[in-house]
Image 1 (cartoon, rainbow, N blue to C red):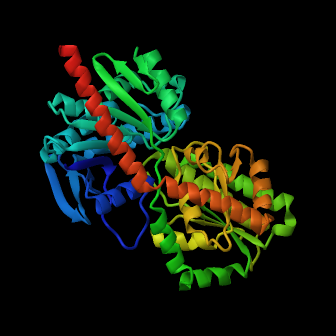
Image 2: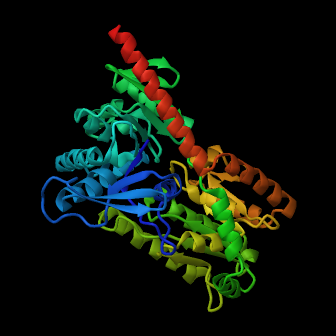
Amino acid sequence: MKMLLISNRIAAPQSSGPVPGGLAAALQVATEKYGAWWIGSNSKQSKEDVSGGDAISVTQAGAGQLVSVDFPRAAYRSFYNGMANSVIWPVLHDRADLVHYAPEYFAAYRTINDAMADAVCRVAEPDSLIWVHDYHYFMLGQALRRRSMNNRIGFFLHTPFPSASTLACLPPHRDIMKSLAAYDLIGFQTCGDLLRFRDYATSELVATMIAHTVLRVGERRINLGVFPIGIDVERFAAAARRRSKSRRIARMRQDLHNGLLVIGVDRLDYSKGLPLRFAAYERFLTQFPDERRRVSFLQITPPTRSEVESYRRFRAELAATAGDINARFGGADWTPLRYVNEGFSPEELADFYRISKIACVTPLRDGMNLVAKEYVAAQDPEDPGVLILSKFAGAAQELNAGLIVNPYDPDEVARSLHDALSMSHAERFERWETLYRILRKGGLQGWYDSFIAALKAASMRSVADTLLSVA
């Protein structure tokens, strides 16, 4: 049985270079290890403004296949920079104030979802399982059903799901959300996300609750589930062990002058709470002056969505803030905050995590946040570091043995930094051991297998319902 994974972009196999985002990293492993077919756009779009989905290429990726789809450039730009990232993304992250909507964005969103449906139909087989990922393709299931595709189709949302009142700020919210009824199964990162979707569906889509996690919308039955995404724990831990004595780490230790390192790793996005994180570090340096020169903060922030104006402004704001902190507290022999706009490979990140005494993971809203999990997996069991984690990250539902903080309170985060630095070895080990045990139970393969099993079961129930209704 062929397994098809669909997302906005695909990531080619790599042994070096920047690590892909959480979604891409997970699907890359699923493709290479489990033999899935991963379908998504390539990095280049066609210059011609014609229907997409016609130009596809298939390449081997481990045990699986990568299917690259070429879309018309103009439509894809309005789909990606416009509807996906200037409209849907801010709404999903409770920032409706940043929405910049235009009707042509929604038209392009429909166009690309239809073009992707054409591409999927070209490679799907009658018994293929189809798993659609993330907000770029909310409407793909509906487009596939219009093409008479009766396959089992599931959808997983990697981001948070907002409240009904926030989602109502999205101009075409009913058109987009009602299209989700085409899926047999919809998966979420947390119970809170599922409950918010259920509340929206019953109030705005006139859905009927059949059971706690089953809705009926019109003639369609939708199964809901919670599937917190994990990481390949053993693979990441092994990478950290192999590279713990690398030359890069030796140089970093030399640069630190045997000081302690705090690390943050985030895409350049306003949802990650970086201005407030920098403010918290500034409060830490102000309130605990004895820690100066003993501690350095490394913030790794690969740029993203550089064509979106709000992201360009945000990048300039962070660079200015980092410069102010270094000018105020730094010296010729000590840089308090190293703010790096560069991506690193998984192995290089494992290096940095391994030598960092603290990971500061403080998003304002996050579906899961795999950096928190990667940091725990990379730690030295003999001398583990401390995870500081936002209560608004999906990962906080699982990793509550970390120091859970409110990212909107810089003073609380500053105190947590100090508490983590002064924490005893016994407490650090106890917290880390608990976190690591949780990671082992909820790894990447478990996430993958549990969703597939639920999709098969959901489809079987839907078929049974159809037969009963006909009878």
